[in-house]
Length: 124
Image (tube, rainbow, N blue to C red):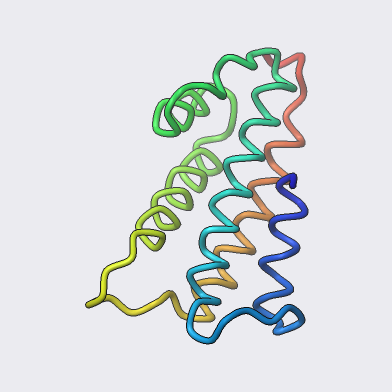
């Protein structure tokens, strides 16, 4: 599945159009959103002519975005991936992400996806 399909599935779960086991929907949406972000970055590096960058750790990829995106969008990418990664690590003493957090992350992912797809390859 590509980033759009993963984000769409996450949206459908949040809207209760796709049923999942009781109590795991928030975590599932979180994993889907993080995977969608990672797939979008993979596609971005392929379009940019630097496909080998996708094989690097995510932190390295996010650092390298600084030279290709605006500081605001680079910060958004780093923040979003960090929040999603933190939420993916399940701890019994932590609450699952709230519906508002999930919706905000979904919106931020859409904004970042648009920014990544808007970067022209001549900029490299």
